[in-house]
Length: 183
Image (cartoon, rainbow, N blue to C red; front, side, top):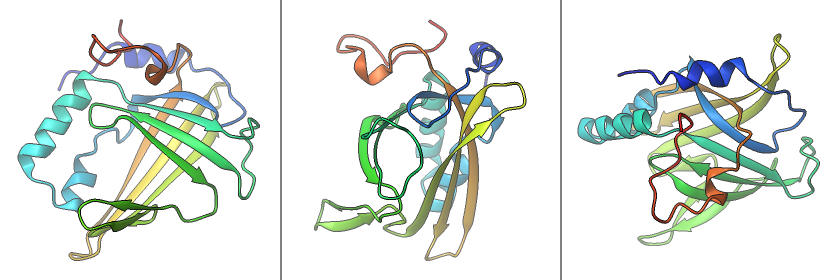
């Protein structure tokens, strides 16, 4: 899989932030940007994993985080909205209250999806602000999945860096493919 040249440029121009608020783009040069181990733990078919990897190689992954109070500080019971944009998640929007379990009903059968458990897997998705020695800021995603049937577990570390252009979900892409940071 060929690495995009723009990834090095993104890391080199990393901006400093004091909160999680803003748009973040996946830094493929650090951590484990591949979702393969995560998908394998879930028992996803190899062909579907390969399709996911192809999509990830062709499209950037973004998280846009907005604190509803606008402060971005990590206070208990504060609400945030996260818009996820990737080849798999096209503007998936989640509104969460920090320190509180999020439950939603999914079809078929109105089964419950919780922030910590879905179907056959227990999922913990932590996002932390990291102040780099270089003076820049990263968002560290620690994604842990445990298959409750097999007992298999995997933790994926993914780093995101500030993305300073207009967040992709705010750009009208009706006639275009998803934005690519190399353009």
